[in-house]
Image 1 (tube, rainbow, N blue to C red):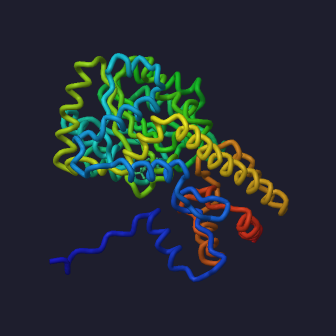
Image 2: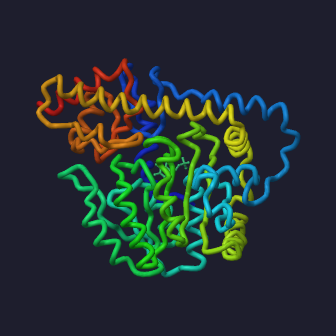
Image 3: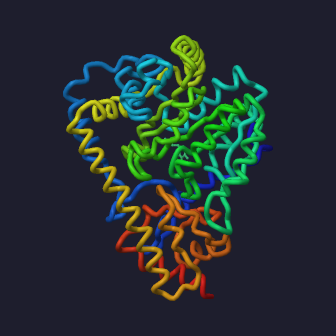
Length: 398
Ligand code: PMP
């Protein structure tokens, strides 16, 4: 059956982890996949998660199916975190949320729902974007279009080009936006720029689809949701795909959510009915554990504070590594100015390293970087930073 079928290429990011695992070099460093690492290079379970899990083991009484959209305690708390507790979107009940398996599942279910009713719409993604975005939306049957985002020369957002492109997006098309911590560039819009983007969405009547996989990795959980708040204030229809993979470190619990914000409660109920249909035929109902852990933490003031502290520690360690990398390169006499790395936010940096250098780092030094030069800063630690800086300095000088 399979003899005449060619194997699919390995996933560009997860395939790198595979290669890293098989590399026998003890000095190897993985700056590829987007997973947080602590100072020891480990990805331990957050203490708030451990505490919530201990509580759940005591109290959980059954493993019966969850509702199609997940446990209400989960979806209600997701909305509070996304919009802020006092948000009009919550009090007017014009948002509906379903627990989805990770941010990926959330994107896919949102895409499926949209495809049912807007089959002719195009989905616009930033250039560049997370590699899986195009896969998720094109496998749902959407045609993908691109809007300019990253300005390689200035290492910032090419905002004028982005605006021009967004102004020309036809009514009813879908525009995928990274709500914060843009992956792969690490370059975000300012609040003022978000105002302009939301005003265009409102004027041109296209649908913002916000991918929110890194809430709390930029400035903080409430600061990072400014794009969501602006869309909510504008009163427009929009979608949010959120994830607790990174900010709760619950990568393998597949804990995300798809949220649809509609004009009013009645429209939101219609959206939920169709979202449930979309979910029912794909995974029927979500896995429970991660959602129950998240709901436990988000609804308990003590666990919530512990989570905020642990999230802050992760965020600040990444920022410290940005500084260490820039200083490490400059103290090694590297001519290029890498200071832009400290201005970017989130886990990633578009380092500006060429594909040739990326290949050299992997071959000669066992340092794994995604093609295009995206570095996961969380892969840097006090014990490997000198090795990485030496290697990059050597590569740039030779
Ligand atoms: N969106 C972006 C921009 C991401 O970087 C990721 C994770 N790498 C996701 C969505 C999906 O997250 P999850 O692992 O929760 O599916």
